[in-house]
Length: 308
Image (cartoon, rainbow, N blue to C red; front, side, top):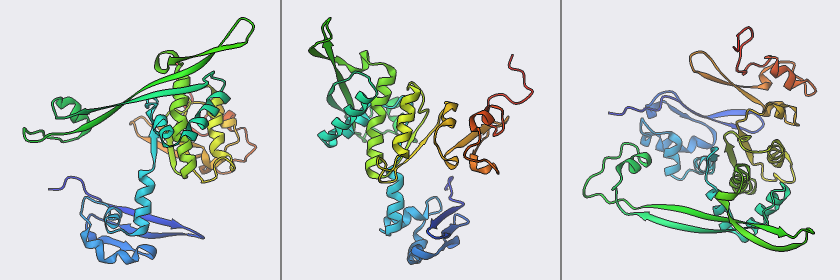
C-alpha cells in the first residue's frame, strides 16, 4: 500500500504572460491535464504512478521540457554553515584557472593566503559493517548477509601558503600551513563558498546558502551579494538565495522583490512573504528603520511583550 501520494502538481510557463501547462488534482493519472509544450505527453500519462510526479515520468520518456526542469533542480547546490571545503576543491579540480579565481578573491578579502595546496584521499567502505553509518545514508535500509555495499568517501588535506617577511618588511620566504588548524572560521567559510559561487555564476544555476552572514565579515557578505547583482559578473543569470540575520543588508542596493521575511507563529508554523506584499513601499523608504519598528513583522519580540 502506498503511504505517500501525489495529491497535486502544477507547472506554469511565463513568457509574455503566465500560462499553466500542467495541472494535477489527485494521485490518479486521469486527473492530469496537459497544455502547450507538454500536450505531446498525453500518451505517457497512464505510466505515472500515484506516488510519483508526472514530470519524473516525462523525464524518463525524454521529453525535453521535463529533462530541462529535472536538470535545473539537480544543479541546485545547498550550503549549510558547516559545509565542507571539498565543494571548492572539486571546483578547482575542474580547471587550474579556477584556482587562480579563488586565490584572487581570497586576496581581495585581504586574508593573506598566497596559494593553496591540497591532497585528496579516497577510501572505500566495502560492506555494511557499521549499521548506524549506513542508516544515516539510506533511509529504510534493511541489511542482509548477502548484500555487500561499496561506499566511497573522500577527505581533503588542505594547506594554505603565507608569506614570511623580515623586520624591514622584505619578503624572505613562504610557508604552507594546515588549513583547518590555522585559518580562521571566516577564512574557511569564504573558501568553502567561493567554489560553489563561481560554479553558479559560470553555469547560471541556483545557489542556496544557509546563514550567509555566519562567521563572515559584513563587507564580505556584501561582496558576495554584489557578485550576483552585478551584470558583468553574473552574465548567465545565476541566482542566490540566502538566509541571514544581518538586518543591515536592508540598507544595501537590493530590490524590494529580493527581500523576503520569515515569521513564526505560536504554533511553530513559519510564513514566508515578500517586501513587495506591502503596498506603497518605495525604493527610498527607510526599510531598515521600518523593519526594526515592526512594520513588516518577522521580529523576535512582539509589541508590548516583555524581554525580561
